[in-house]
Length: 315
Length: 315
Image 1: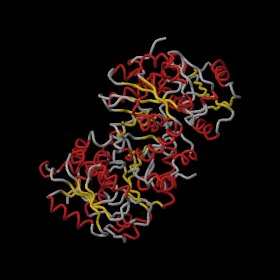
Image 2: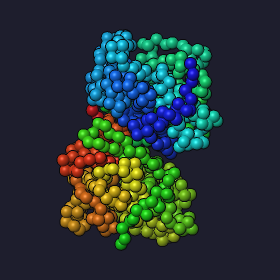
Image 3: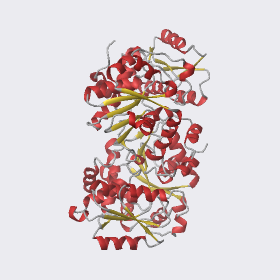
Image 4: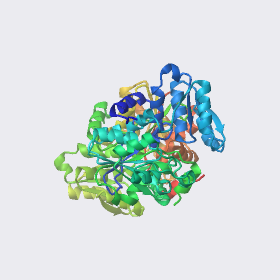
């Protein structure tokens, strides 16, 4: 099980150019330290997931790719795979739970994907049936070298734009995002630290890193957090990347996450979904646990329901 | 009275590099046409004004600049001049009306500027007194070639990033923004059209362009619009730029502006102040009056009070 390399990440950067937005570092002069936000909410699907999905789809042999791609996800990865398939002009099947909000189903269909509704717990089985039947290719949300390399382009861009960065903060859940970012940052600037941020209510990665092996939390526990993009657990592959490259992890409370969504809207003029705001929550409320210096906080996405956003920004 | 040239704008681009954010074009796949947003709300002071202010301050002879700069404004230009002075390490005096909200006064002071409270109608007089007393330099909000050239860097970036752009939309008020953008776009891609967007309730520029000469609206009328950054009137200098370079103008209603703020937050994940959202309001509600093709809408700023934003995003 090899780790993703900087060469993989550079190849991903070439592949995604023109499809993913080359996001800038947004200075945050209102913060207590030299801080820049990496606004991945500005991607065409509203989150960083387009980088990994597009790179993974782009790596598939064209003849095989033409038969289509399959994903199981109700969230940002689903949108990203559907969008990538649209750009490549190939079919996409997205398997989602039966109780997925209609608005998310419609958003996925709007990209031309076929949405397959699945009974609870049957998503993976159903996705694999489609893969068999159509001879299509599964695009996993994080447990995939192509996906990890795609997310790693964020780290590459950060070091390119801020060569003397001291600290990079990224959310962690399945671990594809931080694995890719850490692989890039450690290759290009070993002196920089990469820290993960996780909700207290879904802190399985913090528990795993503390113990040195994967610790599983019941899904009912992880589902308690408002950060609905951070309810997954690392795979062996992403955990190995984290053990190799990640310097530390902090956890944030639900109130701290809510506060960070409001601060990002009011001070940085960026709409973050709760999962996307955990890094800023960490900086606002746990700066004492973090190394000092020039800091980049990855804002991973902005897909939040209008009514939830209105609630979060209520004064 | 010479118009600003593309050489002036290129010089401004060199000057502001590293201080103003090189904003990307954010694709808007949710729109009815190929649309990209130019998110100037991501600038360090929350609006495009940093470009013009920084360029104008940068053009002052260093010995003279060291004696300080003066601005009269209660809005985004005040923040921008204060920020530019801080970067150059020179004193700044910002003259604001006595009734300016405390939060804006504090924000200006936070950049190290001296805030001078002025009775209604006395701002310009007071600012000129400080200029005399300190031998400092006044930085006007729009009626200045350096300011116009700085704003023009937005047009330069648009054509660099999207060389086959067909239509650029920008808000208009004092006219510094659209004058600079139009000068750049017309120099680099004459085939592209540049259109202005203005609130119906402060449509003095539309009236002026229709008549072919400056038409003044009473300030009480202009102050009716929620778009508090669009209550000024063009100067002779900015009106000349518009007559030379701007292809058309449309106006938008207050409800259309409110709607655009919500759409930008929910679909583009960007917080716009009402003034910053007028271009998207025009696209959402008056597309039939606009040329077709690849379109860039300038989102000029994001400085909106938290309570006003909460109201605008109420579902």
